[in-house]
Length: 295
Image (cartoon, rainbow, N blue to C red; front, side, top):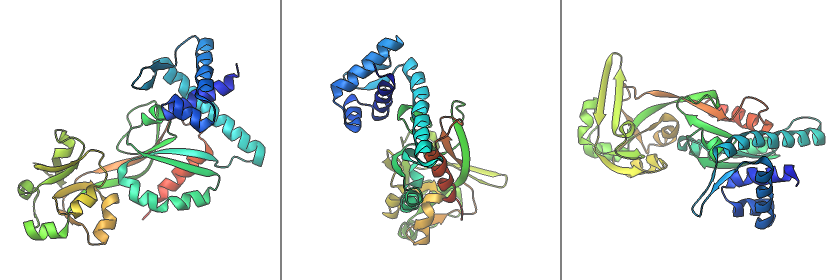
């Protein structure tokens, strides 16, 4: 058995969540890939995957093994780069998990990152969960909020503040509230589930004052993408991060309200699996991501 090849098969299967997709991306027959992974399991004497007709999931032992094997693949990739060019340069595909709040600003500037790193390709998905580093085989997650899981390394790259906005037309029709208590007559556009407190109960502070307001929900966007666009349609009020709201406010499509009150500030972290042997492509992306928060 070519163990290194089998490990490569295993890692790609984890990352694509499918034997078929992994075989296609590696340009090998699925039967060859399946046999390679089966031979690897036989040598290891433990099962890597819980196989079912509905989904392919790692066993606990398989998840631990993948973490080590993935680092091995990254080390080999960088060793090959050193051999070819004499220095460690960013190369390969960087798999990025991204909070939806950053999609517009990052997508608009992604060309800068790729132009500065011609040996790098990028694969982006929407997620705010650090566990996607293992579950989805990501290299880095740009996350809003604290990181409490000590299994991951979090590097703070900026911060965002929540603001409440609506379309100017909606405010012309319904009035511009002067106090959080005035919001009871408005409707909300929220991400996620309407029975989750963080989305349906909005907290405002000003000095020692604190107000918590519950708004009736008119629209729920399950993935939290398009909140600003929905608000621009005049449906209701939306609480979004200033990072996402600024372009629309500057264009006059949205208007921030209750700006003398704070809705809370959150840190933004670049989360990676380990601080050891961080690939050059990941270091390059984190350095680039920091520039998104420079005014």
